[in-house]
Image (cartoon, rainbow, N blue to C red; front, side, top):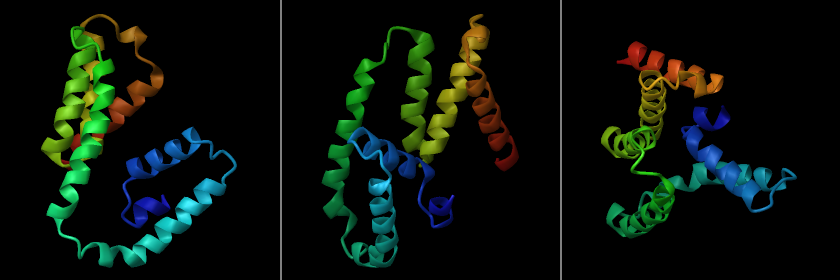
Length: 141
């Protein structure tokens, strides 16, 4: 919550935490160092704004290439897997919002499961998240 209040995406905070755990940071020291560095970055971020966007675009393209590595594991011939995955990947850049992309993917997964008769296979948590995402779209748009 503190990260969101300071303007940090909650998805970014989650990725930082999961990456730290995957690299062996389970004691909490890695999280405290990461938090301290985020705190310092709040004050140093104006210096980073001096770097023009064209100078950082190559790094962002390479990060995007590395992120697409996971997409090859999707069974693109299975419609019930491919549609939510595609909507998630496509809606993130179209809406300029990572959580909207995830929302479209989760909602489409639940709807496809319902209309293909596999509603019982959807876990309760997924139903709740899909309902909350749908409510968010109805209330805010």
